[in-house]
Amino acid sequence: MQATIGDRRVGYDSFGSGIPLLLIHAFPLNRTMYAEQNKELAKGARVVSFDAPGVGNSESAEVSIDGLADLAVGLMDALHIQTAVVGGVSMGGYAALAFARLYPDRLRGLILADTRAAADSPEGRKGRQEMADVALNEGSAAIAERMIPRVLGATTLKRRRKIVDRVRGMIESTPPEAIAALSLALGGRCDSTALLSDIRVPTLVVTGEEDALTPASEAREWGGKIRHAKIVEIPDAGHLANIETPDRFNSIVREFLEGLPPSR
Image (cartoon, rainbow, N blue to C red; front, side, top):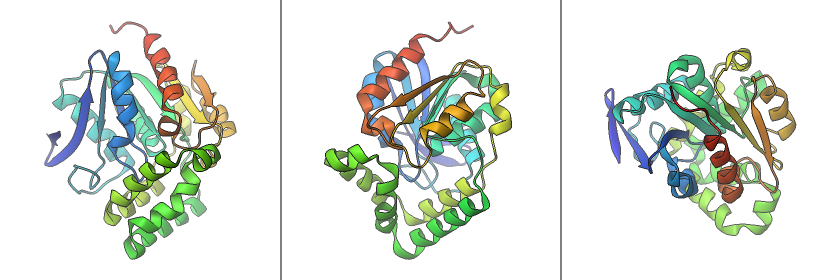
């Protein structure tokens, strides 16, 4: 499906009914990374996801992490959703934190999976530029070769060939120009560390125990700064826990949603 938000068309999915759960995808994937959540969590929630600019079924446009939060609230408006639990994996978590900063009155809860609150270091920003250059000069397949060993855990790489192939397919289907733009957007994102102590909505922090990019130890540190946050580690999962261990991920999220206070 597509929605017109401002002057652009945005590809999105909406499954189920109940409490709105808006999920923002990871870099450099697309909204289909939430296929298992669409199927299972939609039994008790309205699961909404969308493609970033230039990805999947969304038109190309300038992109920033704050801009992804703007798209999220624009999609909520288009779908007549007043408040939602907003979450995401990796880049999606950065955008969810931006949403919490920019639109706190539209937020019912937060789900932050395999992500971090801090901005990139100068070395990290340099790496984002290098990633953008590789995408533009060598193509999406070269990005897949670089990223798969980093975003998937050891267990998945050894035992879950279908998941490896699925993630590779998502990365290779993302246009190089979109990968480059998103990589630079990641490097330019705001530091959300100071925001953490001001978050008042129920928050779930999920991390894969085999996540080498945003380690569980780091998630416990920054997640502990959020008032009453629930922090859960998932065994045998890397940086894409919702894809690598969907049953466990869905169970954790379902329990979180069921424990939310009634909407006022």
